[in-house]
Amino acid sequence: MECPKCGAELAGSETECPSCGVILSKARATPPPQPKIDLAQSEAPPPGARKYHYMVAPFHGHIRAGQGVEQVSAQLQDLINHYAGYGWEFVQVGRVSLTVNQGCLAGLLGNATSQLSYDQLIFRAPVVNG
Picture 1 (cartoon, helix red, strand yellow):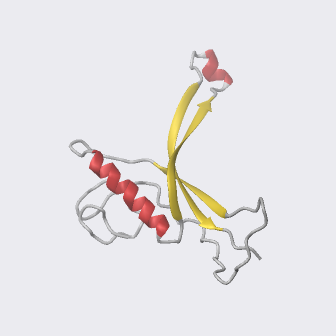
Picture 2 (cartoon, helix red, strand yellow):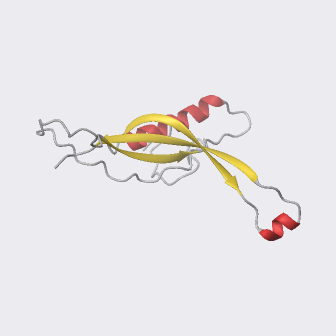
Picture 3 (cartoon, rainbow, N blue to C red):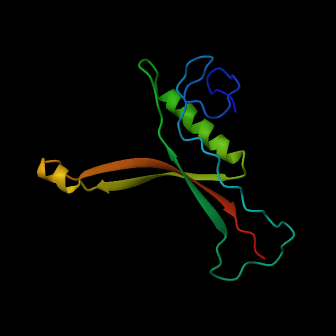
């Protein structure tokens, strides 16, 4: 993997490029292997059969003062290319909303329920029949 800004070679676990200092996306987990594609299979799948396996990965961009949206775009592109390197096809960016209920003590102290939202990258790979 390489830095999206300067092209320096990265091990994949860094959160910051050691060469230029650019902040990298923290979501770089190795995805599950892509299901094998049986190209010799010529029969159509039965009606209602699943055609794809899906994999969802979190995305949270990071910038420093003075950096712009281009930096987050480069982080997103880097993450999509990372998973594509394992054979996963990018489908879309989705959003997941969470409701966080406070515990009893936090409720007594006046802390309310909160809403959080997270971006998720959705990928797919064809299902192998047989």
